Length: 333
Image (spheres, rainbow, N blue to C red):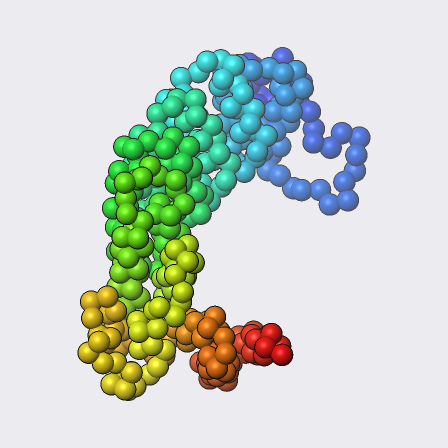
């Protein structure tokens, strides 16, 4: 923006009266803007006051947005102007292709894009654009949220058809991508997709097999353990039903011979990968929660596991594990 003349020096803006941010006020802690930004926003306040909506307003708001992509009022007024002028929104979307990638972490960019697609009613190109954007930042919250909005808002079979394949590819690239795990749960369990003929019990079995395999590859991946819990909670499956799978992850490698047998080692319950750092904190916590849910004598086993976390395996959260022990023992009195 530095090589462009100030709006105050442009003859075509001579009819607009710029408005200073601070009129008749001496602020205690003024914000020191660049001359270019002060100039553009002064003229922006001037056109907002008169209610002008014209092509030059689009130039002005683009100038401001490129200097400060989080300027919500500039985005809002730009959108109102686009609609008022009946401007070609495909042109605006091409501009957004540039700005969204440049300002991936700015909420206002994605909100503006959402408003445009609501008008164009053409979501098909968006999934490819989002996929490309995720190559730049695979965990960007705004990008994933926008993808979920596209899927849920338009809820079209063609949009959903390859979504599970897409999110699986993202997890194959980085199985520690918590955003991708969250998206998979959304697609499988929270999307309201039309798969009425799909056997939900089979879906749960498939997802358990999938997440177990990922856990066996990287046992200390918290995202996968959270997904496992999510599947069990959603399907109301007791944690204790997975003790055979989880037990080998909750003990040192040297203990595997003692805790595994032919009826445990199977394709449904893959063992930790060689060289995995064990025992796994998430597995110990899972086993403790499974024992706690059973109550009775199992509660004492749960407190023993929490104590091992507090004193040895997860001392950083020592106070939390001691709280869990105290709370559990109080509930049995």
